[in-house]
Length: 228
Image: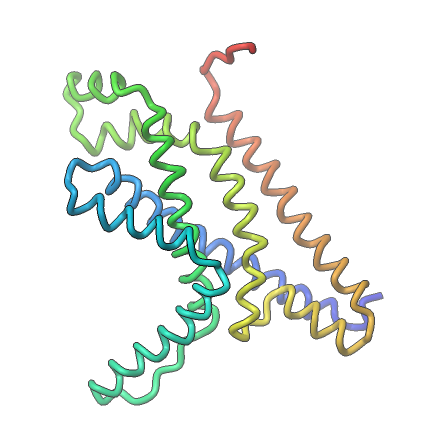
């Protein structure tokens, strides 16, 4: 049915999943750091985070991918030449993960900042009065409640991130869409292979939605639901 390209599509699928998961880790780290910086009282932390979110959300993902891959490679090799290290070739997988994670870190910064603000300040004040330090307040009191508020937006960003992995094909990474394009060109059956690729993306998003729905139920245990 797939003219022998099933294994190739499977490899592309696994690579796509690897890029998405790696990007998610980076985006969560940057998003949490950015949210805490924007909520900080220190302007020295607020300004860089504000510039980061404003700039990244204004530039198309594809432009960022090309800037990181080609501009980053030029910068790395300029440093390498100065140090006498020779030519350094940036791996497309690393470039893709870093770029997508860097881009979505800006979106998650605003998601997590809003989720932090949604937690009543009295919760934090009560925890501090009880004798907890700031780390304990974040991990035991504010963090779990913040995650429940952030979960819907995190789910949406994750679904968009999975689909955004397709842009890594422009830097030569043979992910799912790239493999489907190669198979379509070789067999002259583009409809077949692009439909298969679309169904694989659909399977990713469906399983992700089921996973987030389960997590939402877990985080909502003990929370009274108000009927509208």
